[in-house]
Every structure is written in structure tokens, then in C-alpha cells.
Length: 318
Length: 243
Image 1 (cartoon, rainbow over the protein chains, first blue to last red):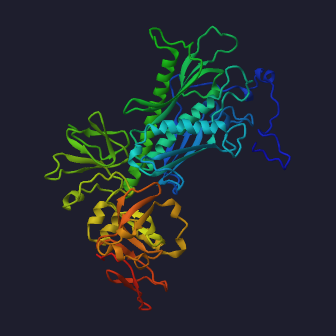
Image 2: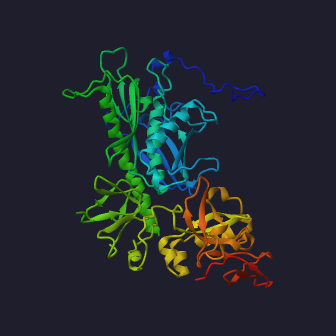
């Protein structure tokens, strides 16, 4: 137990006034749930810039475009509660640096990844100590990057990758009651963003890698209002969980387009009931993985452009 | 054949076929094609007459404005793959002495000198290639900056028998190095988990900067002695030949 026993502590997660689902259904415009305005295969815009932290050997900052409903709510606020959130994160790379004295000899680069949510990143406040989900994300990120880095070129050295999440994706719309399909869907978008940002920061630090590895998310969602369970779920790319009534399954990949290789794959949920186009005889999870790879290709375009831009800037200065 | 090479490359970008080029630092080979593995300007080193037939393709880590073809013209450079800025076997490093013991001296590596700049005899060239060498040395030679950053640097050992080439058994470590000296050394091996091994057993290797007991910068007067310009007192060191 890490709890402070000497003081009277507040509740760990913070409190909010109770909002009843019945109140929300009546539908004042302030509490409208977010709706996806994009096409199923349309991605959110990504802002990505490298080299913003001068003390690190490599760094990057990534931001997803706010959803249409969030942009509207910001321009014309009707409620204090934002309808959805948009991912914002900063990534730093320190190294290559000597391994600590206690570490054993390693002929390869030793990769360490830390992912930390800022306390204010999600609607539920996060503690200062890394919790299980943050450690889980760190392991996933390490797997994704290990396949891309050429580790044998950096013997006896370590590389620390630290990501701070400033704003996380929601796991579902904040107003909806928890139901059976709930899982931490937002984490998957966060991981995809982490992979893309970390890849940019590693390129900024001039660590040898096989390709720029990009993250992408696809999901099977059923958006039908009110009890039409007969309609099969659809495949959507780059899903914002706040915009969908229920997500049945989702998939994150870390993908290297130049080699057509996947270094990390994370599937969650039930992908057996996908409704694909006629003549498409892929299974649900194949479609899901293909969709995530498509999303990663989109992210890679941004990633390549961001790396090239910072490179041209430094070459121009020298 | 790859008719046009891009001026700059990003990781994963295809540069050319291994039929036309051989892969140099900053690149890797996959399915008979050379791909960039770091972001930087693409440099083609023309083939060295006897040993190679193909030009070497590399991605430069140094972001100079114009990709220089000069390393090929300055004649006898050993064509050794040097992928990174880590100390590798045979690379020349500048290090600061952190501890002197009876059998060995512990140093922490400040800079790994480029092969191109290490072979030129012009110190100004050296400064321009590794543009921060001067600043690193001035901060490292300042006693206030000692000890704080050692954990972040690569540690190395100079064993007693690696100090000089002759009279190895008469070496007294206290008369070779003092704590705070800046030493030019060559990497013998990657060593064990915590230390690299350096040697100074060459005329051009040894102490390059040192302060006297009075705290003044000293100048070398012979291969084993340096002198304080203020007090005039001499101190013993294993001195590197000045260029």
C-alpha cells in the first residue's frame, strides 16, 4: 500500500456531482454526445514537431486534432465539461548513455521506456506513482520500438524514453453509464500516439533504426441508437472513443511501411461480428489489423514529414 | 541503378542498390537495397583505389550545410566502419582523469574525436569538426565542474602497463597522471560492463592539458615533464606530443 496513513486523505479519484443518464437523454444541446463527423477511413490531423526540448538528445511533441464537437464546444461553450478530449503528449529521449554500474554487460542498446500521465491528463485524476496501466503502456511501447531500433550499433549503452501524456483520450463518452462493452479503449489511441511520437524523438536523437515506426488504431463500432442490435458493427479508423456509443473491439499496430512489418500488435474485444463490404471475405480481426495498418500509414506520412522538416531546418542553419 | 540520390534522407528511406554502392555508416542493407537508418545528409565517398570497387554511401551525423567530399581526398584514412559517436576500438578520445591508483587510472571520456579530424594535424580543423570540443574542454578543465557529470559519461581505465610503450615496469602512476588532467588516449577494447580500456602508449597520446599544484595551466617541456609558467615548478606527466 502506497497510501499516506498519517493524514486523512481525500477520495483517490476526485469527486464530481452525480449526473444521471435519464437527465442526459432529454437532450439539452449542452449535453449532446459527441458524434463522429469524419468518414470511416478518415484520420484526425496530427501535429508533430521534434527537437523542442533542448536538454534532451531527442524530443518530440504530438497533438491530435480535436474532434468536431470539441472544437465547436471550445468556440461556443455551453457546458463546463468538454464533450471529448484530444491526445497531447511530449516525448524525450536521453542517451545513448553509459549503463549504471550495477547493470550487466550488454552488447546491445538497452531500451527503457516510461509513460506517465500528467495528473490532469484524464477526467479521472492520476496519481504521481506509475500505475499498472502506465506500466502496461510502457511495455507495449518498448516492444514496438525494439523491433525498429538497430540495437547492436550501440554496445554498452542505454536509451531512456520518457513520455508525458498531457491530455489523454477518453475511454467512452463522459456522460454514458458504464456498460458491458467498456474497456480502456482510450489507452489504445494513447499507445498509437506514443509510438509515433517516440519514433520521431528517436530519429531526432540520431539513433539508428530500420524505419520510422508509426502507430495506428482501428476499431469495430456499433453506433446505432436504441436497441438495433441486429445491425453488425462497422470498421472505423482512428476512433475517438467519446464519439461512439459502443466499441466492440479495437486494434493498435506499430508498423514500418518501408519493410511492411508490424512490430507491435494489440487487439482487444470481440472482432467476430464485423460487417464488411460484399465480396470482402476477410475475418473481423484481419480487417481490423488491416485498418490499423492503414491508419499507421497515414500517421507515417506525418511522421516522415516532421522528421524531414526538422532535418532540413538544422541543415539549413549549419 | 539509382540515378539520383536524395540530398537528405530519413530513416527507412531507400537510397540505392548494393550493386552500385557499399553501405557505410548510418545505413543498413535489406534485400539488396541500402536504406538510411538515421536522418541526415546523404554523402557518397568515392571508391578507394585498391581495396574497394564501389563508392560508399553513408548518412552523415554531422549536419553541415554542404556535404563535404573531402575525407576521400585527404589520403590515407583507414576505411573502418564507424557507425556512431560511441567509443569504438581504435578511436581516439579525450578523457579527464578522475582517480589515480597504484595500478591504474580511472578516466571519464569527454569526447570521441572524429577519425577525419584526428588524422589532420591542424588543430583549428579539429575544432571546427567537433565544434564543441573547445567548450567541453574548458568546462571539464574547470575544477568546479568535476564530479557532477561523471555518471553520465563513459568511464574508462588506463592500466599501468598501457601508459607508455617503453620501460613499462618502471611506471609510477602518480608521476604519469593527476586527477583533473585531460588525456588523449586510444581505445584498446570495450572492456567489461563498466569500463572501457584506454592506452596512452604512443608519442601523440598522453596528457594534453594539466594544472599544477598551484592551480595554473602548465605547458609541456618534455615527454615526461610539464612546467607551471607562474611558479616555474616542474611536474611529471606522461605528456602527449603537441602538434
